[in-house]
Image 1: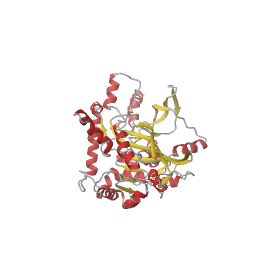
Image 2: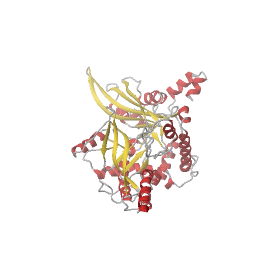
Image 3: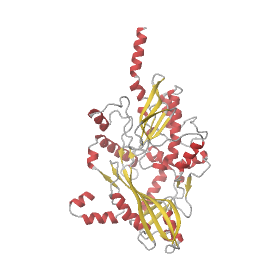
Image 4: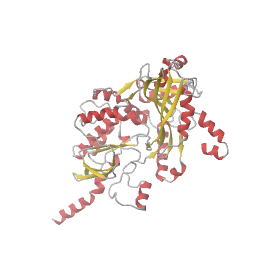
Length: 486
C-alpha cells in the first residue's frame, strides 16, 4: 500500500496512514527478495495449506482437521508447561514473574473501534482447542482502564491473569549457576562445522565442532559429548559432506535449498525499539503509572516494561521507565523496514501512553532489526541427525514464551535419540516415543515430564540418520568388498 500511495502522488495520504492507523503496517513483503528465492514460493504455499488445514476459511466448521490435530493444540499447550517445569527445576531464585495489581503482564489493547465480540470469539476458539482452564480472560471496565492511566485511545483492555513472563535477568542468573558449578561459558563463537564419526554402521555421533571466533576471525575446535543447538535465522542451510567447495554451483545449491537438512526458513525481520519514558510524578498521579508497567499487545505491536527507576532532579521526582517495543514483520528480509517502527511509535506508543501530554517525555534509545526465521509450519522445528545432536530452529517470534519448554523437549529428544543410536530402540519405537510423549529417562532431569502431545509434526523425522547414510555409505561398500575378497 505504501508504495502505491507514494507512486500515485499521494504522500500525505500515506503519511497519515503511518501516523494514525495502528493496523496499517503489520507485515511487509520485499517482492524482489521473494522472487529471487524459488524455495520461498514453496514455503509460502505450504504455509497457506497448513492455515487452511487448521483454520479453514476462518469460519467455524471449515477446518480440515479436528482440533486435536492443529498446531495450536500442540504448541500452545507446550508453551504453558513452562510454569510446571520451572517449579520442578527450582533454581533457588525467581525465574517466572506473574501478574499482580501493579503490573499486568499480558494485556490486549484495542485501539480502533471494532466489534468487541471478535476478541472473545478468538479467546473462546482458543479455549475450545487447548482447554477451558488454560485461558482466563478478564476485560477491564472503562473505569479500570482510566484508573490505570490509559488514554482514551485505548478503547478496550483485556487482561490475562494466568500469563506471566520470564525474568529479564534469567540468562545472566543461569550463567552464574553454570559457572558456580565449575563449568565454562565461552562467547563470541560462530558455529562453522559439525564433525561426526560412525556409530554402529548406520548412524553417527558428533565428535567435534569447529567455531569461528568473531573477534579474532580464527577457527577453534572443541571436542563434544553432546550438542544442543538453538539456531537463529542466519543458520538456514545445513549440508552434509563437502563444505569447502566454492563457486556458482554451491551458491545455486544453497539458493535452491538442495541438500539442506533443515526445512526452509524465511526471514521475518521486526523493528525493535527501546524507549526511555520520563514521567513527572508531580503532574501524573501515582496510580496512573501502572499503565507504563503493563505489558501490552496491540495486534502484532507489543510494548513491554524492562524496568523502572525513580530519580530526582532539582527537587523534582521523576519515574523513568525503560520500554521495549516490537512491530511488524519484513519478509523475507534480514533487516527491518523503517515503516513499521514509525507506525508503532506514532499510532500506538504515543497515543496509548500519552507521551505528548504534560509531564511526560520520551527518548528513543535504540532502534534495531530483530531478525526472525519462520518455517512453513510457522512453529519451531526439531532435528536430530546424529545420535548426540539435537537442533531447534525456525522459532519465529515465539522467543522466550517457549524457551523453558523447548529446553526440556530437547533433553527428551536427546535421550531417545541416543537410545536409537545405541540400538536400544528401533526407528518405529523412536517415532512412537515422540508421538505419545513417552520419553522414559531424560538426561539430567529427575522429575516428571509434563508433555502429552504428539510432537512428530514438529520433528524432522526424515533427516534422522541422513549424515551417516551420506558420509559412510562408501565405508560400507569397502567393507563388503573386503568381506567378498576374504
